[in-house]
Length: 345
Image (cartoon, rainbow, N blue to C red; front, side, top):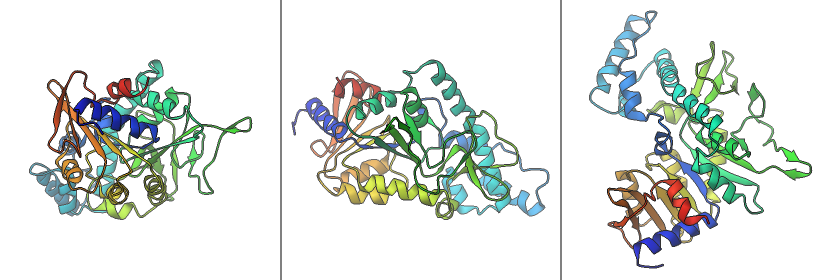
């Protein structure tokens, strides 16, 4: 590979895209569309009142949790203060009520702007071949990947059947055909749930249409940070979704990570194992590379990588050739849309 930074960037980015990578979307991919992240959610939960129907011991526990939030991050607070089931449900519902309307705003923008998502351009480019499936793996609850597929007139699949009240696809993946040809499908494996997944009083999980308000009498199926995350992800639908995500990651010929901080052990193990092969390139695009991501990339466990973050004059890249980083002046190629201008003719 070239030792000139800009040429090195182009070569590795082109190689990654040419291998039809598994796409990993982190919170930074959502932030680009105005969807708040964990710091904003933490600030919101600090202001959520304990229900008047709560028992005295529950009110005490909620006060302890909110006090903890003032001194630490959300995940640590949920780890250290073990909330009872009723208050865990309050965290889930409050998380949905705060974040889902932002997702709905993106949906409304996508209705009138089919060029809103660079992901759409990437999906269509990757399907400019004989392949019929793309895999997206994400811990995000939002539906950015689904909207991007819709904008490109592509089918998306998240583990549920099609329709308004969508049952889980327990008998195998449904495949839509046009004539005798299987439709090109973007598989979105949402390992921590989705804003459109709900569980009824009988424990049955199903999907519903896009909405700005939470349907009554059902509980959102999303996994919030904290110790409960590790227990809940062994239940359905998370177990099956995680299994499909693992298959995609294990079989990947390349990884394209967008706004991903490498802070999720659910995805990390498989990614690290696969990246130990020097033939599997990994490209990371993000506004600011997290300390965890830098430690992972510098550990030597990833033989071929390119990480691009924002810098005042354009971007800064990191790779095996440039482990301490090199500035590249010009366009902000840490953004997917800008990178695609270079990679896709």
